[in-house]
Length: 112
Image 1: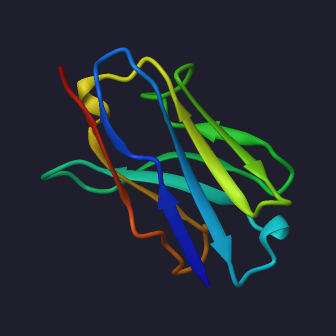
Image 2: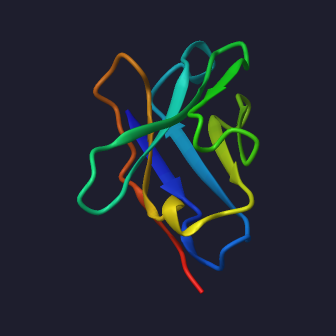
């Protein structure tokens, strides 16, 4: 099983980024998927999840700004991040809840 995250980078406050996580080696459509992040010196925290039926849940800190979606045909989950703030700076990971499968992480830096 591989989860390959991409799309991170440097963006100014108020900007947008879209992260992608491509999965291989699993029956993608039956799994829920999650995005997590870890800022320097802090614990890894949940950003949000999407069920196999497409239902989404988000941390309060990102509600209304971030959107998770999935494309089962492409075996890919996305994290659209809008109105980014400096406190969103972190390494972002995709994860299959209930398993030990994690993506390698992609750095998001929000700074002017």
